[in-house]
Length: 299
Image (tube, rainbow, N blue to C red; front, side, top):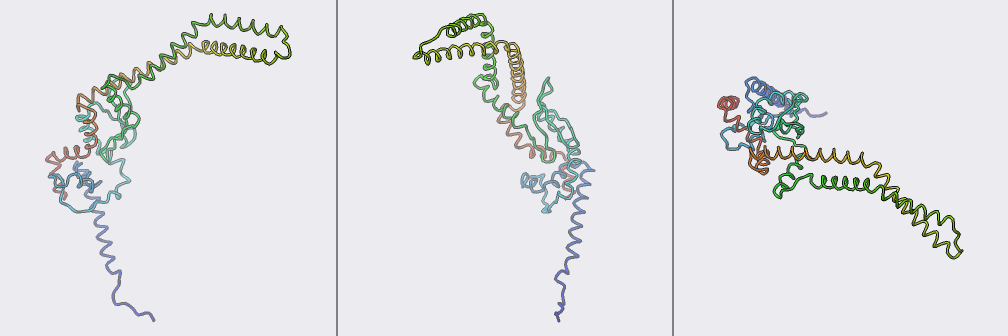
């Protein structure tokens, strides 16, 4: 017979369960109250408390609370929270980055456009929850390269535009040389007919065959150039269209560089500001007396 234990080793389970449930309810109530009161600063703390404390350790906007917040309880509401938090964030960004424009294409999902000029570029996405830019890597690298090349009075698309211009010049030359090729083709065709009309001695047949093949190769090469010349107008138009597109892109890159220099002075300072965006924005919320008081009250 198994001896019955006088104490239940899981006897504390009920109190642990109750405390855990109370903690979750308190978290959700805290989140709800912060949203209803417009306390975005504390909402961000509830979303990622560790990041918040890492950024503001020892700062006057950091709370002294050691609570562990579990955002997974509200993670299925990320889109709704992103939409709610976007109002103050985009208002802040409008002052710090006046050249960026935002489009909410889906609840809580935001595209970033650089500039409000014609043909402005889709530059990436805004991550409201994490207060971060997610720039399109290709577009961002192109802008960074544009800044580097500007120092030497160079352009990103210059090599490609020069290549297209050279190709257009080559095609125009092919068209201009059509009459010259026609004369060469007639001469080659006459020579080939001569080879066909005369018989060669047996010991000459290999040499004659080789010479005739060389003439045929030359004739085929001229025919290939004729075909390129026939298609030249279509290709020239394509080249001109592509050069215009690249030229417009250079103009847009110029607008973007000027916008960044007017606000930040340099691309390096622009990059540094992007890296510090979370801290800068939450600090701006903390500078709001009402929100600071609300954080202290919630804690």
